[in-house]
Structures are given as C-alpha cells and as structure tokens.
Amino acid sequence: MTAWQLRIAGVSKSFGGFKALSGIDVEIAPGERVGLIGPNGSGKTTLMSCIAGSLRINGGSIAFEGKEISGLPAYQRTRLGIARTYQLPQPFRSMTVLENLIVPLEYVAHRGSLHTTDTRAEAMQILERIGLTDKAGTVSTHLTQIDLRKLELARAMAARPRMLIADEAMAGLSSVEVEDVLGILWKLNESGITVVMIEHIMKAVMRFSQRVLCLDAGKLICAGTPEAVVADPDVQRAYLGA
Image 1 (cartoon, rainbow, N blue to C red):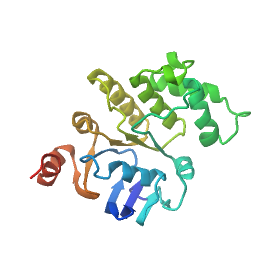
Image 2 (cartoon, helix red, strand yellow; image 1 turned 135 degrees about the vertical axis):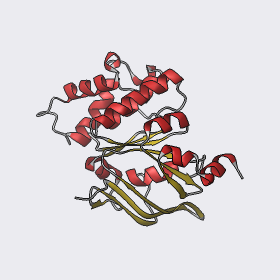
Image 3 (spheres, rainbow, N blue to C red; image 1 turned 90 degrees about the vertical axis):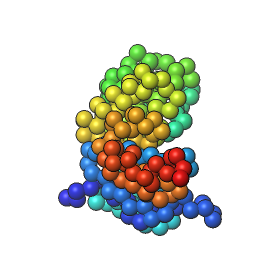
Image 4 (cartoon, rainbow, N blue to C red; image 1 turned 180 degrees about the vertical axis):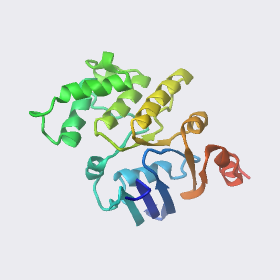
C-alpha cells in the first residue's frame, strides 16, 4: 500500500509552442485537503484537467492508488474514483436536478444497472447531503448561482469519488454562500473523500486546506502549510510582483 493516493511525477503539458506545465511533481495522501493557488494563467486548471483526463500530458506520469492512469480516458479515471467540478457549471439544462444525478449514477456508478439498483433513492440521498432536496424537481435552468454550484458538486458525488477536484466551486458567491459550500466540502472530506480545491478566494483556501500548492507560469513554486505558503517570498512575488 502506497502512502499517497495521487502521484504526479515530472508532468508537462504544452499547447503548440506554449508550455503550460513544466515538470510538476506532487503527491497527495488519501483523505487530504489540498488547496491549489496561483495567478490567472498559472496552470491550475490545466493540471487538474490532466489529472481528470480531459487533457493528455506530454511528459511525465500520473498514478492514482498505485495505478498508472496517464493513458486512460476521462471516463475510466472517473470510474476509478476521480471526480471534478468545473468553473462554469455544466448541467443538462433541459433536465431536472434529480435527472441530472440519475445520468452519472447510471453510467458511472451503476454502469447501466438501473433494474437492480434504486438509482432515484441514491440520487435523493446525494441531494440531501448537498442541501438540494427541495430542488429535486426543478429544471436546472431555473436554479440560482449557489444552487448551480451545489448541483455541480452533487453531480460529481454521483460518481462515488474517492478524490474530488473542486475547480473554483465558490466563484461569484457571496460570503454566506461561500460558507455554505465550504461546509459541504468539509462534510465530504470527513466522509473520507480527498478534496483538491482550486480557488481564488484565499480566505477559504487557507481555512480549508491542510496543505497548499502554488503554481506560477506552469511551475510548482511552493508547497506547504497555508501559513508557510502565504509567507513565501516567491508566492508573494507571483501575486504582487517584484
């Protein structure tokens, strides 16, 4: 048994002549709460997309729970236990909140076994955990911004993840709504799910994370406790300039 759940070794990613990631080395332990920060364009979402499988790396390797996953498509990585949310919620717009969960439950968690599994009941359990039970019959286009964020988390949970990548799950929310989403992420982590948070709301990152990683220009410039990272001169230069 390895001490890490996810290991990223020497990962690089280029888009034409632009090098988005350069030699990233990271290990994440099971059940850990990790914050990923960095200026706009630093490579945060690119790195998470490489982990989730929507982008293929150009060099290095990615392993999850002892299995090399660099060559696997996104859906296979999801079935292994890696789920993610997106900066812009992407629900099935013509479907209700409940139907938005039934789809991933059927095709990822149950793999088509609707006749032997009470998918609707499981979907309602997820909505209860996320706080959307009263919106189960609402078409997703009628949801508020906070409820769309919650639905995005619920859809990720429908894949029964062991690692959740939350990509700016609090963007555009009020302070009260940020606390609401933080509370959900805390509960998910307490249930045993590893949470990797990409977020620009530094107060939220510092409170939630056990460890923070900082990217700048596609390179990992600092990793450590929240207090150590915010005090690091390289991190300060990345955010504030020389």
